[in-house]
Image (cartoon, rainbow, N blue to C red):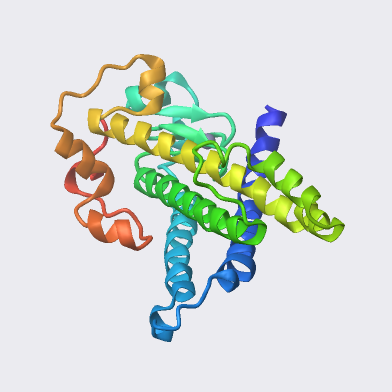
Length: 269
Ligand SMILES: [Zn+2]
C-alpha cells in the first residue's frame, strides 16, 4: 500500500515535469527554428500557426487534467462500514479505493497520473485528457523530428529512420567535427530521447482513449469488466450521452465541467 501511495505522488509529479519540458522545448527550441515564409503575413506565419495549435492542445490536456482532479467521483463515505450501511449503496458499480480511502459511485479505475479515482463525474474529462495528451505528444514528436532533421541534416524518408535515429545521429556527429559531436551528445540527444518518449506516451494515451470509448459505448466500466458484471442493455447513444452530456461539442473544444443529463443524474441501477 505504501508503494501505491508513493506512486500516487510520483506519477503526477512526473507528468507535470514532462509537460514543463515539452512546453520549454516547443517555445524556446522548435518554434524559433521554424523557417519564416516571406510571402506569409506575420499573423499566419508557420511559427504562429504551430504555436497556436500547440497551445490549443496543451491547454485542453492540462485543463481537463485539472478538471479530472476537481471533479472527483461521488464519495459515498459511509458505505464502507457496517453491513447495514453498506446495503444502502448501489452494489454493482461502487468500489472502495484503497489509495483514495473512499467509496466511489460508478467507479472505473484509479488513475495514478492524476492521483484520483475515475468515475461517473470525471470520465468525460479523463477521456479528453487522454485524447489531448496523445495529440500534444504526437504533435511535439512531429515538430521535434522536423527540428532534428534540419539541425542534423538527417532524412526521414526511410520508414525505419525514426527507430534508428539514435545511432544514426551519433555516427553523423562523429563524421563531422568534435564540436558537432558534443552538440549531438548534449541538447540534440535530449531532444531525440524526448521524441521516443512522446511517441510512446502518444500511442499509449491513444490506445487507452480508444479502449475507454469502447467500454462507454457498451455502457460498461473497467471495474465492471474486471468483476464480470453484466452489461446494461441500453442504446449506445444513451451510453455516450450519459458520459459526454448534451453540450459535448463545446466540451471537446474547451475544458469545462461535465454537463450532466437527466440519466446521468440518476443513481446507477
Ligand atoms: Zn482512487
